[in-house]
Image (tube, rainbow over all chains, first blue to last red; front, top):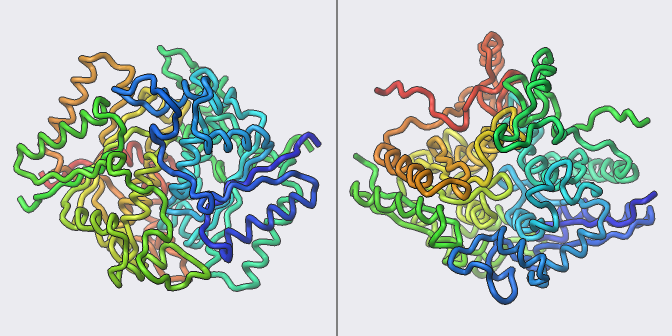
Length: 278
Length: 278
């Protein structure tokens, strides 16, 4: 086992919450397996959510026209990022797996988690213009979103009032995690624990505990390999014609986002493909 | 013309940015039309992005188990929300249209805008458990996302490396704006202005200016009416069987999220349906 360190990015205010319990189960289960577990308790840390010039020490490269990604890229290379970002970088650098544990707020992670993404997944550290997706700088790491919903699962079906949960997961999992190269494991979704009975909540946590025992051996979710796209400026990073031809006869698109005008591949962002390694 | 006040929620650090120019064009064009224009310049205001107990004055209802939505719902009813939230509520209450102007960060709005959503779209003010979607408390207001991208449009096509832009817009437009009842106008997308020539940038701003002249008369985007769903707990807020039957013979799903296992309706989150009012 090469995997040794797990980082939990945790975002709930209350130690008596279901999210806290899910975080604690992960800490205990993974520690018992011999992993080093690090927790960033974002609210307790009073983690700054806004990406601003305060993230850069000393002089700005272009104070007249401040651009966050450009300035932090330079500051990263020159070791001038704020201490709180540097601390998170050290944690991420050690981590073989990152678990994001949060309540779904407005169809997404809370702003404090979005702020962590913006501030910590720095250009130069997590990706470069040349190193995205398959070649993202985090390609040797795994990541998993573990979250609670207020609404029941039925509302997040393709015929539910909130729409298919796979659609809302796409920007989070493809646009952030896969973009940086992370191998994204199937999300752990706790459907409506606030409306569940104590025994149902207990069963949810036991299922999570059971999954944690084999989490690191799971096959990741399926995304489109960068090789399938013509990345030249002229082609505009669209699928290669021969790949589109291959998919012309298929019943489904390639992924939730690269759907090619076909039905979405079912559960593309919620279930891993069959594990052909076993 | 009943429409009188426009609120611009603006999120860019730099007054020399393209986002600032787009915000200024909106201010000038709308002011010239006789509208009152209010701007919330979130970074300049140092707007707090994290939803925390600091948003509530005096005693918490349940300090042992702090739940943000519950506590702020009570605090709203008892006029105990923090002053910065109350100021934003006053602006939203006046607004007939809200324009969100921001650079796309990680397939979404910046954390500071996500924080505005979490903190300002308070339960009791923007929605209640009974008042969502068609019946959301903001149903007499319009909203539009106006944003810049780093990547060109080709990357955000259904065969592009970032996937269909309609997919990433779904959680933002349906899950936040439509959820609160807003009539959501087609997004104003500025594709890659940082890589455009000065004359191309000028043309983008002129197109925005031209659109602003008729913006408030535009037909909103098409979402699924709440009436199409069986909202009973037993049915789980899924489409009524007779509605599903109607769609069984259609080539496309209902919306990007309610796709029913069919191809997504093209441009569902980017283009309004034909305006049958004219």
